[in-house]
Image (cartoon, rainbow, N blue to C red; front, side, top):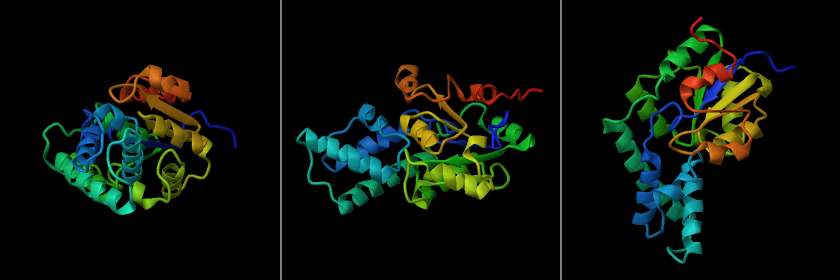
Length: 238
């Protein structure tokens, strides 16, 4: 089947794409790793944004060990660090006044669905964190979204295709060429490529610059979430 003029499904990342992020996730990862005795800073943590958080923690801890800082990385230690990360990030999303949707997110969701295009979210977060975010923003399935897929609901997180393919399954779409993925990190682009998405849209911004994302060859590279409809060939004002 040929790629249609417009997608049947658009799968959006959460933090940094549809949910405002001021390096909050990187900060909480850095804090959890440092508490466990590893070297990390926000810039290094940012290189693992979008990934399932236990995997990101294990990789960042291994990088710290290469610097001679930290102890042997074990599954139990990764779980302990992940619990500390979850405590910090969940508290942030539950209570911090900066938590809000990215500009235009709700309006874009509604406009796409009005045109018969399904809308899903996928994320490197686990379900408990996502439920906190959704409750805070007032988003839900099926009122606002058609599906939300979290990293603990699939065998492999980004940059594997599992999240995207599960979103397709839940939305009843079978051809990835008829679908779009939108994200702001290298792992988002990797997911879209692994899934052979017809549109693999990257948003340059606070997380990663155009210079960092362009070599990964997304199908479209835009400057803001509000630029995504045009990349999809849609004018949401008509």
